[in-house]
Length: 405
Image (cartoon, rainbow, N blue to C red; front, side, top):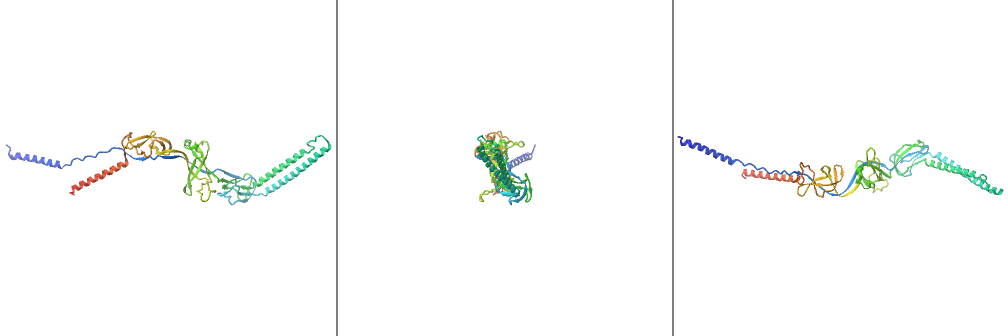
């Protein structure tokens, strides 16, 4: 039979184990509750601004003179005089003397022609007088009609022809004498000079090359499908020319004067011709002068086109099937149907479908569904910062409790 001690000891051990289990169980921390995860997609947006817009067509070209002339000698002779401004880069006025060919031979030829004409005129007057005498004598001799030969009419016609030939010789001699003076055909800049003082030139010899400074031209290539954005196919449109002068960015204003009306065989481009008056600012007052636009300069051109009452620019990659993603006032995804006027580089011009202040979604969505709930990246960042502040506050409070403060 078991003793009392053998019965009590197991009971004490069991009670002690149960008590220890109870103590350890009370010391165990309850599992932390996991915070609820917000799976709302976060997006970035850009605010739409709808304003009046003027379309532009971009092009480029080289500045050239509207007129240029190769000066050619029309008579033979030695160069006996040169103007000080007849140098490359010099500016000259219309009819200004550039060079003179030795005129002595041509002055002598003119005197000779004038003498020949005086002789012919004297012979003509003599023949006229003889004809009158012959007519008078014929009437005294007979009553029959005189012949033309008897009245010396053939001789009169011959002398008249000689007078006309003499007049032609005088005109030719005068013209040749005038051609000994090489003059500027218009206000111009000297592009080159091919003669020197004392050099001999013949008919057809190149004297020099001049560029008209009255008007500059720029041929601007434009694709055919861009003409629809220009009123009257670009004629009379304003053009802003962008280029450099002395290393600085400059701008000039020009006007489209004509459309060449031909498609280039190689580039398949049409050409609009812009004109700029007084490119070297030679006629402007000192107060009105702007930077000269030099011949040979390369310029970029922005041709002013049609105006749109209300339009905006949207990145092209955001347009899918004629729609763009918008974040509405309820923070939900909405697809807006838009009217695209034109494509301009990496953007498109939209005339209808968007309102001023609309939030255009510019970030990518994995599985977009019209009407789905979205969150702004800025709002998510603020919420995250707020959660971090709350967590830091709770941690600080727990530390204070443990330290007995």
